[in-house]
Image (cartoon, rainbow over all chains, first blue to last red; front, side, top):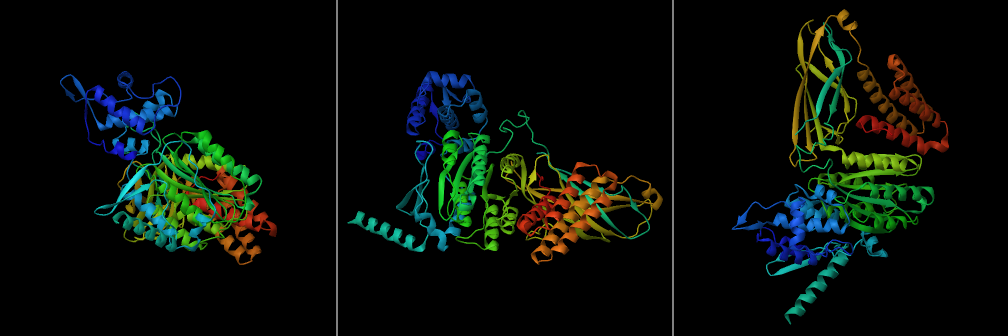
Length: 198
Length: 425
């Protein structure tokens, strides 16, 4: 899901109908529709005009003929507005949270951001603290899986292992904590890969 | 960007000419107050975004009042957060559970419902729980906001890694990678020698809950502190002039790898007092001297680049009569005395550990008389009255062997708050 938003980076949308079509698809993809209430769930042209007038979406400066050219930033603004509306925040509060935010900040707010260098550093460090410890298997003892607060799906991330091989990792996935478990995971992965070949 | 204000004070404005002397210099660093001016910073909503993990002890000893208060405090924390913040809750006894992973704080009721179901059981896998909390934070690292683990426990680490040195080193390692750690110890049975250094090396705050009712207040202060954080990774160097020697820095700061003093995080609008004792040679009356050069390095909360602030302090020398007739600065006397008292508390703690209770009591008694004598001219100042009451009360509780654990914690935390300028509750 997250990937589909990030793939839009750098794209432009000429004219309101095109912008409404793409953003409508993404709202559905990200499941940002409101469950109930009076606001239409998928943003149509009229809603977008309203958002522009309310300053929730920045008015695009670029034009092609008579058509406004919307940017990736506009798209993120729209998606964030929908997300916060789905969380029943008042327009005034939403404007405060969205106005002036950079692409990066909006991506973070939407929870679609890919990891940067520093981000993974702390995570890698903590994982290294767990890995060799004998106590690390505690987590597997009997702990029930983490409970999620909303129905929104996890984000997925692709990691290239070598050319031609990618791992697709869910955001809540915890790598095996012991060497034994790591070995068993690797064996299973290799087994599956070989079966693909046969 | 706005820089902290650095001021220098000596007991009297001018130094005595014609003799070698030891001079107390109070260095007060005041970070700018939070700016709520949106016109200059359209992006700024008055505070950084928070990315927190509450790591909550649910071991058997938490049963009853402590567990209830801990739950209430966690729910209070949920209430104070914004939809742009993220929160996760990890609970631990001998097992560790991610109650919920890092989520934007939008569905507050759902979060509180989950917290409400946490009850006490089992023993204390403190280290792994801390790591798990850190992981939930690290998965959603904020570049500019605050990434922090808040560890709440009443017990000793007795499952998994339990070595204090190891955990404290790891806490610093995690801080260097962008996630800080605060610790909240409840009652008399936790290990202050683990929780305090863990927070200090971890770039957070160390709290001690004496009464279960303190918890909510601590959470409020912790959150306000997070919200008001001005800078982290703060270091100080003091370079004395030729012929001037630094005898002592009373705060007993740890040193960084490069030999600078490691300072606590700077809080917006909240001053940090540092006292340096300098040995200064004889100078002529009327002459001036650049006594000390200061260099303050820090990482502002809003920026990605470290900043360095340089400032020098120049003093003037005057005749003995002129100096004696000039007014005394109470703030300097108070700062010196409180930091000396912090040392007395640490000394009393050492004597307690060695079984010398009479010695510990004597150390506190001396500190109390010294404070009364030094602060006689402004004895009614609330901070002075509180300090005297605290010394007296701890000295009394030292007489009671049953209160040992609590007495030691009171000494440890009082010394810590005075040396780091953290607000005492």
